Amino acid sequence: MQQAIVADTLVSLTAVAGLLILRGTIKRGEAGSSIDRRFLFGIDVICTMMLARLLWWVSGISLFDTITIIAAGMIPLAALILSEGLLLRHAPRFLKLIAAGGALVFFVLAFLSPQFADPARIYALLLLQSFMFMSIGVLVLTRDRDSLSVAQNRTVGRIGLSLVLILPFAISDYRTDPFDTPVRLSGIAVLFLCWLAVSLGRGNLSHQEIARSFLMLFVSAVAAGVSVAWLAGFDIRTAIQATAIIMAFSILASIYNEAKTTQRDAERDSLLRYIARSTTDSPAVFLQGLQRHALVEGALILDTAALGDFDASFRACFTHDPIRKRSELDMKNAHSHNEQLGWFFEKYDATHVMLVSENPFVVVALNMPTLAASPGAEIELRAVQRVAYLLSQQRAVS
Image (tube, rainbow, N blue to C red; front, side, top):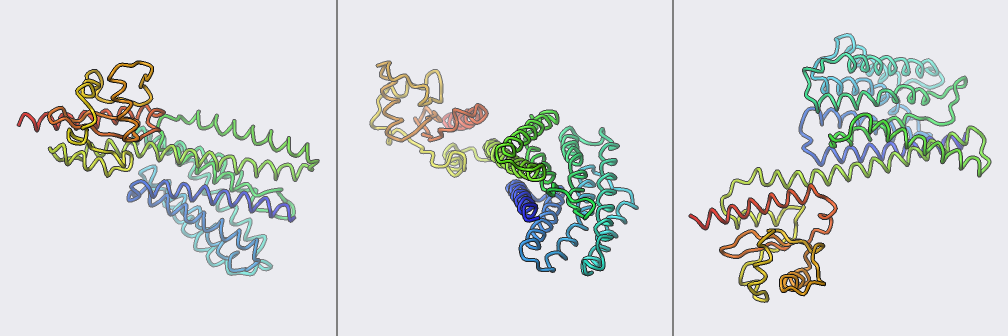
């Protein structure tokens, strides 16, 4: 039994970590929309249940068991609220009554003694969650796809995909004498939901790619669990626990990587938003605002007075390309252009330099070593250069 508690604890802890990563991803965005608030409410409910359950296992304090049951009874209501927001339609009235009534009933039942209420209370909670998840699945499958955009249909599809795992995995949480599972697997389902939700920011990933990635991760975790069990001489029960732990931490790592990728994409998008929202016609004000942007923080604006170490051949470096990169510099070529650029990059510890004005002559030095690995970011940087250059040309004409 002690091994089961250890496995349950580790899987639940990874689920909480995944939920917190998802919560941070939503909060970093513009978390003021109705969908974001519904997501955050659902995350908070599941986090409360997971943390209260962990504290109940560790401390044995009955208050945490009470909180666990209250939160578990609210999960169907949170799922229904989220599904209504995603589908842009109201759920049938009887489903709302069942979800809200179930949450109220289990709020009351949570304060009853386990000796008096269980196992009837456990089976009733399983029945409520199973019915509501299946009903939400029907709503997702029968939705009016024409009334939703492509992005909205993709979101609903991915959240609906998580229902495939949530219900069967959640059943393993209801451990009773006739159904003594080796490990509670709801944490795995929660992690998969987090993975799908975090990946919503990447529209280039299809449902099939997500499913294949999860299948590959699942097969790898099973192979790792079987290998460890064979080497350590585990029995079947312990092997399943080891496999679940490996899978949980593997999905958590994928969620973290996906969240970081989404964050980097958002930062690049914010650079485009800066261009779109800029209302100034002054190139100096535009560049000063650019200096404060997180993606290009620390950029140096250098005019003719600051470039006294460089001669006319430095200006000629930008004849064919207004943006020059340190990675493309050929120092074997003794041409004066290369010497000038090499000295510039070394003096200002820069990886890129872009021409933003010819009259007066102004360049911007940037230290962005990750830009070479991101073609999308480089294109956006060229858009920034073009806007700044056109502003300078307009100012020169006027």
